[in-house]
Image 1 (spheres, rainbow, N blue to C red):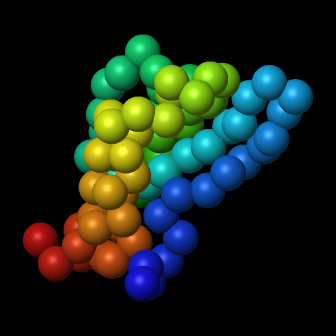
Image 2 (cartoon, one colour):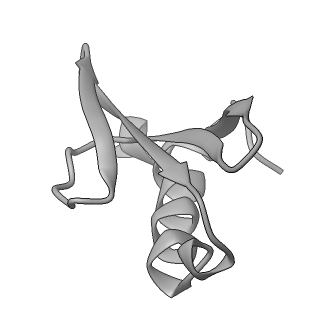
Image 3 (tube, rainbow, N blue to C red):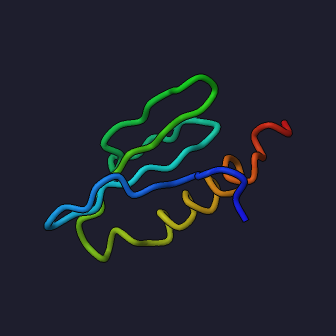
Length: 77
């Protein structure tokens, strides 16, 4: 179980879902609406519009966020 919230749904619109997840480093992708640096962490924001947006890349990002931030892995470095 995660020690802290590592990802969240921010808003559900009529044709999209806005979400974010936290990592210890910033990623670059045209899929991100923005990436915020907050202290030593990076919050990655994206908008999911189609079922194809729920893909292996997103799953990998969320898995990494769970390990790095949700299980506090970034503090053990």
